[in-house]
Length: 377
Image 1 (cartoon, rainbow, N blue to C red):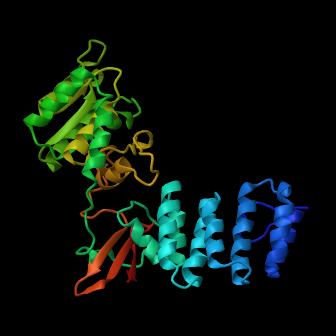
Image 2 (image 1 turned 90 degrees about the horizontal axis):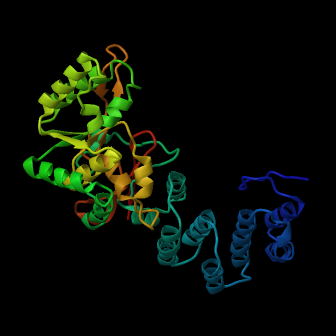
Image 3 (image 1 turned 60 degrees about the vertical axis):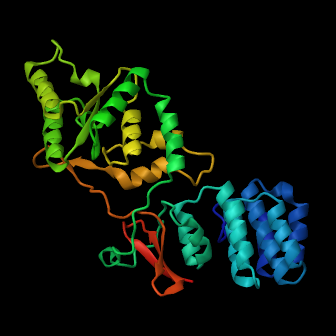
């Protein structure tokens, strides 16, 4: 027989249900013995460890184990992220002078071994684990279900633009540069010496958004004209195959290609065949700290250029702050920019309250594009 109980995603069998009943009856010692003697009945290691944590906490509450045994049980074995969070939540709120130990466990185990996701942010807020949230200052995360509780316009003087770590950024730049062609490296460096740009345009992305229809080059040119008016020094990155005058092209397309070249002149990087345009775009944007006009989220590159620490993702953070999106206008069938760069970063931020150095406001991005504001000590 299978059972569904609160706190477990999967159905559980009769042995597991019996342990669950023992826990409900607060018979923690019996539950502990039954768990040890029936481990083979647990198909799910996650369910087994979830029960184990509940039992450890119960034994401590009953006075059957002391605080040192409690900590040792949790730090000497391997558990899942939610197991650690559940334990830290109990320890933080129920054990005297436990905040320091809770913070250390969160910092040295949870942050080092696991990736923090949006659901975890909700858990920390709902359980008022604010000292742990302080450790996430600067993380580009948002809530999963918790809505904004402020009007952003009233907080503009507190929300800041967070610039990414130069040392880590340079490590990514070195990795990207190795993937560029030798010839193009020289071209890119020369272009960056000649001008100081304020935006880089993902030309290939604009072309791909047209799905290869006959309006591809017309829409590309019209959009580039708009961008040229909006920005002072835009840099266009596009594979040279798209800018090649060919006999197989219609005369109209060849005329538009010439118009694009005349419009942008030397402010074009024509990338080599068989090389990924995205790498040049990301390299220039990161190096010069300028935004990218693209509807591409660059997910494959975000994954490829991650660090070993899953919670450090410089490229994802940079794009979160510096990607300008665009869509097709249904009436005109032309592209238009829909996202402008925020004056502040959508990351978790701490802001000191003037005259009250022991008090902070914490701003946590929410799923509905706002912030959740908390007053913390």
